[in-house]
Length: 164
Ligand code: MG
Image (cartoon, rainbow, N blue to C red; front, side):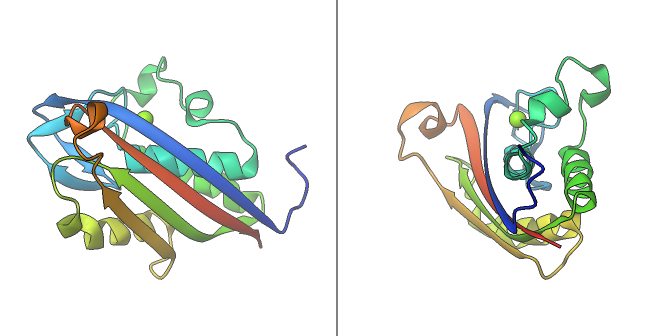
């Protein structure tokens, strides 16, 4: 059962998108490149998709594909922050709030470090708490596999929720 009033809930989310030349690459709601873009139904923001799946996982609510199907035209080109705001709104209505969020990005290019402060601010703003404990880590895949060749981008997110 998923409606057990647990004092804490942990959730993990993972997302990967293939990349294509041209267009905009958004990560955590921040524009990090206008040279490449994810192949996606929505804006393909892997950080936000991983975050949504982590929130859903913590609550025992399935996954992002069940809540925002890519077969529905209303989600075509959707700003992924809408997914975050919608799901976190439901989390809060269900009596939970975020304790902390930890994100790991796997990106070959561009270098993420210069964008981290903007990403942290963007995530906090989206989640409605400018002092929220949010961390973003970024690494490459050392030239291995599709991520290492710059053909794809991926993110993991872990959240802890506590009962309000
Ligand atoms: Mg996705």
